[in-house]
Length: 357
Ligand code: GDP
Image (cartoon, rainbow, N blue to C red):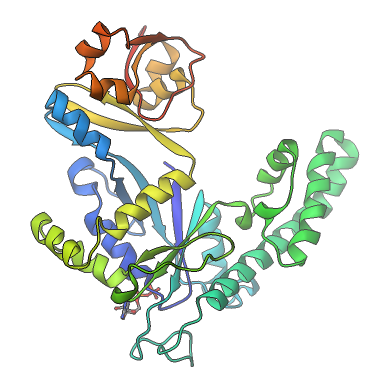
């Protein structure tokens, strides 16, 4: 499964947010036998389309898509020098597919920021900068270790030349204080850069942990990305409530849905994922594929045998399915398509696979 690492300076609300995420997660409902790392939270990705499908087929259960969040120990200044948890932090974050940085916007005199800085004042831009600097420094170290090896190998293996070239360009770029992902690269260079395992190549999103009364406010972008405003304290409280009470509390805050829902959806998008659906009496279920996945790859998500034995996919577009009242209606209107192995899945496709076993 694809995972997102939660990072941020100490006392920004990471643990509070992570606890809320795991409490609320679909884990208990859908993964009764899973024993997982306490640092990993599997979280439902809310999708209103599931209920619309369920209203048509009345299934026994609804199973949403999920994303995985990983709680990464606090990052402090100097992590790249291997102080304390620094090295461990960088190793953990290297294994995730994307980064979610929590930035402190809430003011609280009782909760210190870093050592020696009181909590009455905040400086989100500077905090985000501190983390980015650590990530960039770590990447420079990674490259400085790799380049001499690459130079040696490239003398024997000419195919390594583009990788070496892009590694050298990246060092210069990072040394100017930029993140790797922001460098202009051809598709070939980008592919080569992937093999360098840089932290600042990963897709990144920002969560602004705001005070309750800031929830409706428009926030300034960080690194060109608008942060997702969340109040971790409120989310923690919401995650403890029964659904009706939670709905009432949300309304009193003037919110349409919990911030965690918005976060899960944003994370799913950031990872380049989309859903297709299976809809039957037993269950309506969202399955996850990368954008651009083919029909056999989608079948393989359900079962590896389905990919190997793939014959055809019977596909109904989501809108057609709902407008025409389900499979029979869509079929009668000529909206059930038979697609072959080159078909690129569209977001929301409702699918039956035909396969050989
Ligand atoms: P971490 O070090 O980033 O994991 O931060 P924690 O989640 O442990 O939070 C540090 C302190 O800030 C705790 O005392 C939390 O109760 C408090 N805190 C977290 N989120 C909020 C918030 O949204 N508002 C306020 N006022 N305090 C918060």
